[in-house]
Length: 199
Image 1 (cartoon, rainbow, N blue to C red):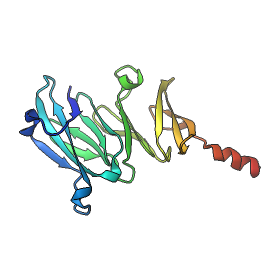
Image 2: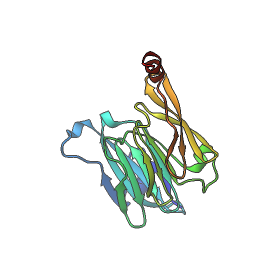
Image 3: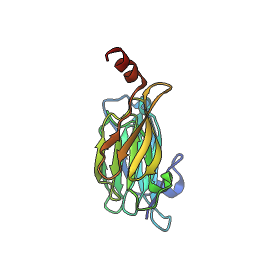
Image 4: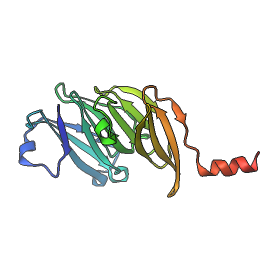
């Protein structure tokens, strides 16, 4: 099992650790970029690997990191990464247009047994289920337009609320945890208004 955390600055214990740089783009002025770092430690707590992140200030949303026995999942500033610390493999599971990550959840975060699911990742728009090895099991696109809140799992359904009109336009949704099928789609408040007029 790995442990991972965002680092404040560059502590001495992490300065000499192998590092992988992610997120740098020559198209963006350096002055607009945020430097961020994730430290990954082994089961004994020894520093193993450092992920150096860069992203524009305009892409600064949540900073999330969770780990399993084999991978670390990072969501920060347009970076949606699965890291395999032992092999140093790093890959992205979303492009930058989808990547305003809001949360990365493990079963314990939602009060579920450890084997209930791998990782549930939500962005401003989309929802992903990754297995314990960071492989995508399903991806629900455009579930929201302003973020979502995950409420938990009940009877095999992942339940939450999606924002469709800021600040108060929240609508409930349910997704089958195994298949990713949308069982209850979020219905924006204005859809009811539209139905009443065009009946």
